[in-house]
Amino acid sequence: MKTEKQLSGENISKFVLAGNAKVTIENPATGVRFTYKIRRRDNADGSKTPWFVSVLRGSDNTSDYSYIGFIKAGQFVWGGKKARAGKDAPSVRAFDWFFRHLDDPRPANVYHSGCCGRCGRELTVPESIETGLGPVCVNK
Image (cartoon, rainbow, N blue to C red; front, side):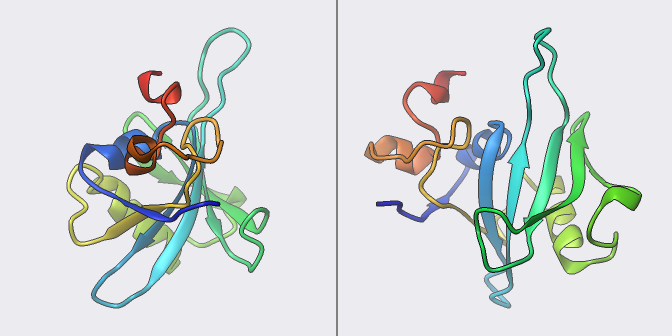
């Protein structure tokens, strides 16, 4: 049974940048929310790719994600021609704002769906549900 959980404080950035995160960001003033998938791959040579950011754009929350940009050198960069949403799309602007305020996103509510932000396994331990990272992945 997956449990949606609100993230807070340092747990937000740890979860978002864990490598396999699905996060919902909600503006509490308007109720508008977007769900994003933020993934990073380890290459065979030990190097890492940038984080790739996609937004949920359909009703199937497992496969209806569309690429909007990437995170590299501590900045979110819109994906240009490859992005499936324009630079001024509300979902792109919302993620850009969120990422610039990652250390202090108080004006936004941030949720995970009950799966580890690194490996994707369902979280069952209360401390893991709180952080969004499983007991093994929290130290990686």
